[in-house]
Image 1: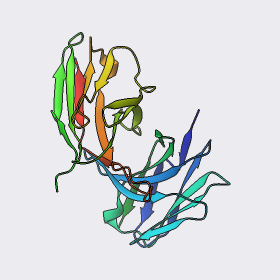
Image 2 (image 1 turned 90 degrees about the horizontal axis):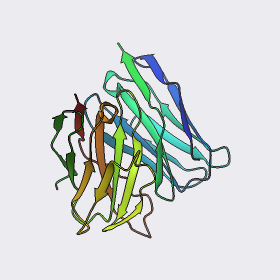
Image 3 (image 1 turned 60 degrees about the horizontal axis):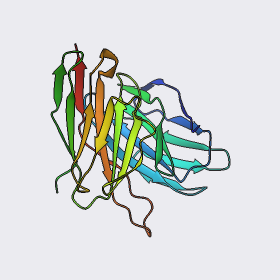
Image 4 (image 1 turned 180 degrees about the vertical axis):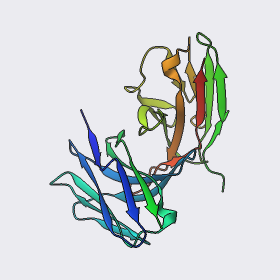
Length: 109
Length: 117
């Protein structure tokens, strides 16, 4: 059974600091996704990673994928308050989608 | 253009009642997914359609849950004889299927918040 584990589950950061969220998964995957969810809102797609060594960046967020280690990371650079949200990774194995439990990020001034 | 639309946004039902939740995917999106999201948790996969074909229903928690997409566009998730543990947000997502572009994300609707009393 495909399992997806994220850590940390809760993250409190100071503005301007860097941090990394980790996503481990248990079986071979076709795709790995990162989503953002604000309270009471739906999920917003951030990145789709397909292949080993894939790296994508958008603003202060950078995602990478190591398929051999079955690990993806979401790196936050110089955090700002607007990044406060819950971040989910999700793994797609032949359209069987599994989400991690989410990382609730709070960025403090 | 319009995103994924779900209705109703909120639904309150008494235990034992049947409910029906609707999803209008983005026009032209072949794939459609239903998820259940409990408070403070990640979405849990329920079922997947490609056009009108339900290719995977392994996530449906019981035979009280039924989903259909008869014409390959709008989908309905029906829950019969609702129970309190069915209370959750039900999310619908759709995506394109482009062989040459496998990096298509799923686009999520705002969800239906179901409360069973």
